Image (cartoon, rainbow, N blue to C red):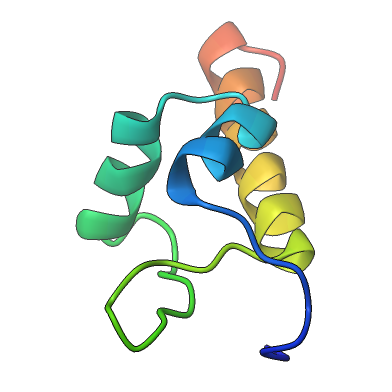
Length: 69
């Protein structure tokens, strides 16, 4: 990703995706979704493309859980 692009925190990313921060981190820690770029301190950087990818993953999960897919 481009380091000059806008990025957001894990908490804000989770809110935009529609899940809790703990759910988003659990997905990453368990390998259910690919981790995102981290800065030199180890903090995750969520870019718009990451949000889109994770939102799509979440919407797919909701569809499977409701029996729609």
